[in-house]
Structure formats: C-alpha cells, structure tokens
Amino acid sequence: MDCRNIDNGNVIIKSNSYVDQPYIIDTGDAWLACVTAGSGHEGQPGQHVITLRSRDRGRTWGEKAQVESPDMPESSYAVMHRCAGGRIYCFYNYNAGNLRAVRADADVYPGGQCPRVDSQGHFVYKYSDDGGRSWSERRYKIEMRLFDVDLGNAYGGEILFFWNVGKPFVSAEGLLVPVTKIGGFGRGFMYDTEGALLLCRNIETESDPDKLLWETLPDGPHGIKAPRGITRVSEEHSYVTLSDGGIFCVFRTTSSQPWCAYSGDGGHSFGAPRPLTYFDGSPVYNPRAANFIWKCKNGRYLYWHHNHNGNDFTGRNPVWLSGAVEYMTGEGSCLKFSYPEVLLYSHDREARFSYPDMIEYDGDCYFTESDKTCARIHRADSEILARLWRFG
Image (cartoon, rainbow, N blue to C red; front, side, top):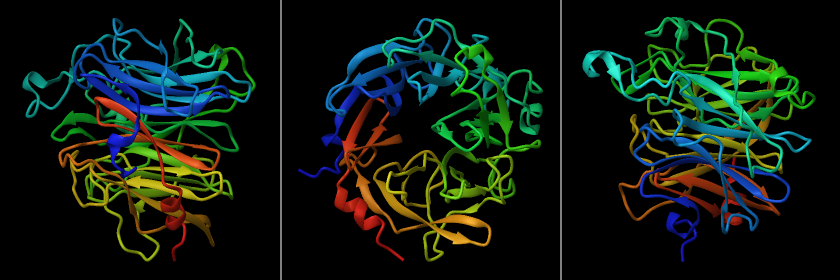
C-alpha cells in the first residue's frame, strides 16, 4: 500500500456536498479540527463553521460542535489559536449583513451582481473554554483598518471583501491573524487581492474578549502583493517566524509562480516581494492554489505546493513538498528551499485537493487536506521528510 495515495488517509469528515479547510490544533487532551462545511457547493447558502475532536491522533473524529449554525448567514474559512491558558479562539468570515449578492463587474456577472457572499462581511471570532466541545454564543467583530484596495471597491469600503486561509502565528509583538483583502469580483473571480495581518497584543493576558485590541498591518495603505503589472492576484498568504524574529510569507498568484516577502519589524513593513526560487535560483512553480509553509519543531521548514506552471484553480494533484532551512544574510535570516518530492497523489487525474494543515506529534508529521467533499489526515513518511532537508 502506498501511503502517499490520498485514499489511504484517515477521514476527518466526509460529505456528499462541501467540506473544506481542515485545520488542526492540539488542545492537550485531543486534536481539534475546524472545517467549513455546507449542504451545497462552495459558497452556497448554509455554509458554516464546525469543529471536531480526535483522541487517537486523527484515526477517528467525533464530538462535532457548531461554531455557527447552517441556518444563520454564511460563516466560512475558519482558523484557530489556542492561548497558553487553554482558551481557544476561532476566527472566520461572517456574512453579517445577510447579503444575497454583492456588486461585481457587469461584463462578467449579469446585472453586476456576484452571488458569492462568503468572502465579505465581518471578520469575527468566538471562543471555547472546554477544548472545542462548545463555543461562545456571542461572536466578536475585528475592526480592520481600510487600505486603498478597500476604499476602491464597489462599496467604497462600506462593505469589505476579504477571506482567510492562513493560520494565526505568534511574534514578539503578539498574535497575528492573516487575511486576504479583495478589490473586486470579475474575470477570474477575485482580483486586486493582497495580504494583511491583524495584530492582537493582549490576547494572552486579557480574559474579556470584548477588550482584545487589534491593529491592521502592514502600516500604510497597501498590503503584501506582487506588482500589479505582473499579476492582480496576491492571496492566501502563509507565514512563519524565523529564528531572528523575522517573518517570511509566501502566497499564490496567477503568474505561474508563488511569490514571497520578508519582514524584519514584526509585520509593520515587508520588503519588496519576489518570485520564490529553489536553493539554486531556479523557479518554483505553482498555479492559483494554496501553497503553505510550516515551521517544524526541529527548526526547519516544510513547504506544500503543486510544482507546475499553471495559472488558474486547476492542477492540484499531486501535491509536492519541499524542505527549507535558514541561512544568514546581511539583512537577517532567510530561507532556501530544496527540490520537491511527491507528498500525496490521487489516481483520479482530475482530483483537486488542497487547503492543508500540518501537526507534529512524537516525531511524526501529519498533513490534512480536502478535495471539497472529504477532509483527510495523513501521516507523512519520515524518510521523505529527512531527504528534503539534505540539500544544497
């Protein structure tokens, strides 16, 4: 049996409809997964956030809890953070105005109305004090500072277009929660996208969720993006912190390459983004699909991508994994990336699986993924991972 075939993973949740973004944290007594689910296709009414728990390292999942009800306005694209004291926060999109369409480019959408309402509204959070078995009744809104891309949208910033797939991470200044801002909806679906971070300095010390204080980074009127002359798509940023306190991010584009950027000041500013390359300077390729990076407990990094030069939403089979290690430059710590190995594949050439997460336990790395109807978890071959860090 080839452990790299996705069919050999353990199922987190399976549906005849929509299942996406299975992200995991360790609660201490269980693994907790948050998932965006729905009774229809992606973006249709009823889409909502749920959580499930596993007490056996991903073999079985149960104790399902609704963060939001499917009978409420759409909730989508959740990520979680566990505080040192055990409280868990879940951050997600919420269609607070219960809109049924948003203004969009009339040459693409009839009547200038896009029916997808899952990437706008309020960015909100709920919390759990019982390991994800239940969630607060009340949701709390994060106020995002407006960028030029918000002011230039079809509502002049009165309604914000955005979503998130990047997991929260901790820096010297506090917790940072990623979001992707959207300029508009038209050809290619979303365009004029760019990355931002929401910084909370007091989440570890403040028990009243009403009193959490949020700042929007980077400073200034623009987010993290490739030059618009190259691509109008810079989205789904994935971040890691480096050993010197710097921040590295990588994000998808429609230029056939992922782009990356570094910050040396806690996310207040980022250097000029550039295409991602392997250690020898050759280009990394990736379509308009999630490409994520994680920092492992050994101080090294793993990078998920699809290793071909497409520029749309297709081509998500197989998944390739590169290793990365730090090296020092005059500007601080940077990353260099190995050539990739296949991590997961499907015999179905049209299969599309993506939106992964990685969790470590007892020396092993486990990866989640979803093909939009089934979310799975896989234990990676440790020898494959070891090879990825022996390069250059």
